[in-house]
Length: 255
Image: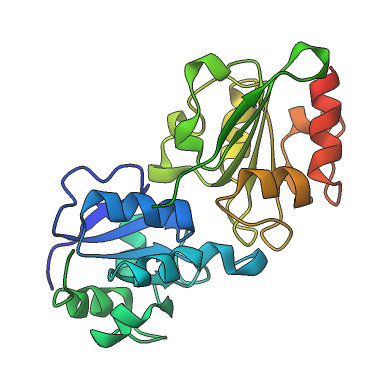
């Protein structure tokens, strides 16, 4: 089997040029854009529970139009944010036409898919960032990827399109700034490990259900999302499962 580049996060693709990438990130359009820009030959994502409007694998079609082979593993077969486990245990749940032309098919083990993608030919969307004033002096920060969070976003309300799992198992990766509140997508229910890590840092955090908001789309998290899980600090602010994310965010902005 060819040696793929294992990237727990698609934001960490140094040296990906011409290689097959297996990444623990979701397969949304933003992630696909980063993979394309890396110059990789092919990429395997996590399907993130697929979610609203198929957003967890929406990048596969985007890459297909660019001629890049892409597939995703079933969220029930491997956790998010851990590319090594995906490679060993992942089962393919989605493929684009370019990957299918290389022989990759549904139900195939990830390792076999990587072997087949070794024959794929190698070869833009823009991520949303919105930072503006908000009632009560706090700012609402909308970022389609948590990788776009800045140190200057400390103390603000950060709404992301990213999944809520810590990539690489390192709690330091939970968030780049000490926000007042941070929201993520639960990617089908299992991606919530950022919440206790952020609790330990004094940061309120919650996830929205994958079927309520498009993963990779911060505005959808804010406008469409429904809270699925929260840490104790978020609960103290009024968060509860089943609550519209926008209602909770508006409470946080007013504090």
